[in-house]
Image (tube, rainbow, N blue to C red; front, side):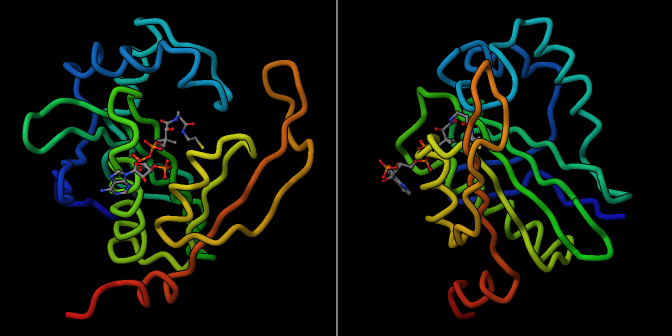
Length: 189
Ligand SMILES: CC(C)(COP(=O)(O)OP(=O)(O)OC[C@H]1O[C@@H](n2cnc3c(N)ncnc32)[C@H](O)[C@@H]1OP(=O)(O)O)[C@@H](O)C(=O)NCCC(=O)NCCS
């Protein structure tokens, strides 16, 4: 079993499990068409978000592959919820994981998603002992691809017309980083 110690701290964020009181803050951005533009879901109602919060609140430890750590990102300084992120445990045998993130547009352009994604890599490599972490996005989702590149992930694939999303065929990018590559980027000490 892997049970991280919460909250996980970064320079400006606290990453912690979902709580019932997060519904309004999460709904504030999950309801926006622009936020879900490149996600498989449509804009979410408050009831959708309520159900998600209930479901994800228990996703705080990993006991078997196929599970995920689902975390909310709040500003350490104020406690304001600014985004959410996830670390999937894809394979025990192959020590593979996957990360994802969604942030409130009111807090885009500050490097907060990059900070959270970096913390997810640390969690995956140091905490869970993964060998390889991937992330994927719609090829038009340049903001997401830039986050992956900033944390040192390598673009490994561009799948052409790979998914039928919201009425159209869409291209998908796959990014990845190995534990050795990640370790080489960490400051000494
Ligand atoms: C993907 C998403 C989280 C990226 O958000 P973002 O605000 O671009 O990412 P960050 O918070 O890391 O901010 C990075 C930007 O802030 C700038 N920035 C400012 N201060 C910074 C800092 N201290 N550190 C790093 N970047 C900083 C960067 O230059 C960058 O801008 P640029 O991309 O124009 O160069 C956001 O677009 C989103 O939530 N989209 C909707 C959901 C989604 O598509 N999720 C991904 C699914 S695959």
